[in-house]
Length: 364
Length: 113
Image (cartoon, rainbow over all chains, first blue to last red; front, side, top):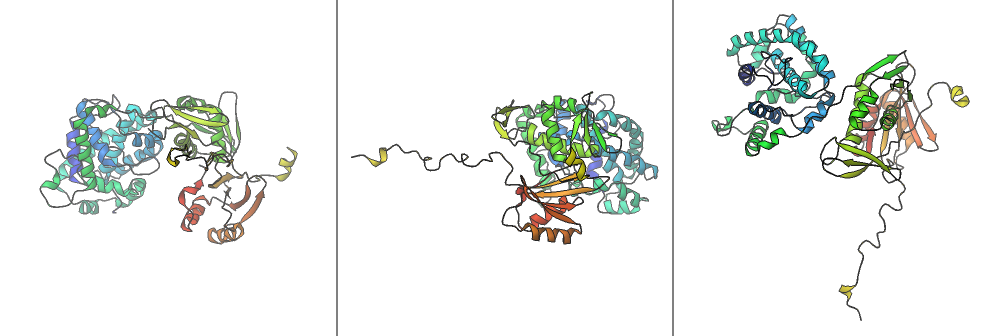
């Protein structure tokens, strides 16, 4: 039970505010009724928790300023491939509604980060195509839930509310991936939307909570220098499209696309992929990569993400705008935006164990 | 007579080139690599390479086999040295085992998907 995202009044309040945002900066596919664009997806694709505090504030500032700005580089980077997990989450939500637990508190809580992430995603994620369809479907359901929720707004005790929930078991299962981040709960409880001068802690003598202070910091920061709002651009890459060829080979269709986007030689990327995955393969006539072995999209994505961390993003300024050059057998990465230059590890494939028939390798 | 303070002294003279004598500049020699390899079907192999010399690979292998309930062998590779090879995907288990037993976390590198 406790794993489910708690219901809290602050969340609701925020949502009410959002409904006014009919001028949505997100384009046609963002439903204005969907209580979306303020909250940000708090989990990344790898399940790591991203701090909600600054992101929300950041977002809010953005909306106020009506400037389409992206959130901090860190989140961006993690959300780069951010669709596969979100897709999964989205599927769950209609399921919840199907069980006629419209009032069930976890649902809106669960759906908002999603929608928020989606709103974010539409602006600058390339993977949004898949999501858009699902999103439309969801919108009506979301509205319904929202209305019901408004009626039941007197309920403040999250636990009591959840106990009344007729389908807790289903929720629990479905929200498993939401549930495993502890931060989602705690940060949901804390109103980060305090404006300067009337912080929540002024009235009571409790301690400040970290998210609150963080929110305050960002608010002050952005008030002082509005230029920061229109800062970095999110770095995105199309998700690798992985198909199966037969049972033993995997086709990675858009390697060249991805390489082009990263400004890297396909050979380098492929070499890295092979050495990381401990396999071999070849590039076929259409520029597709044929990998020996069975791999899922998620797995390839992980490896690619590691490649980007290692060989694409600048370690100094986190910018993906880098060039890789080779000098005296050593690769150097030069950052285009900050000018830093550093050597990167050469790709070394490690020990390859004998797999398959011994006789075959002896002959070959 | 010379004034000692005015002597031109190269503070780095005795150090030499710090990278000169080590051949593995930018190499991954000091890492423990844990890799995975696919076999037929859904079977996999886990290899552990680059174990520091002070550890007895044989004893470690024995412990791995007992701990993870899998089989494994010690492979002598002419280039890579001794490599522990285990059946199945034991990557996370190996890395936690090593880290729990006092190997620094940054020296352990887990590869694979």
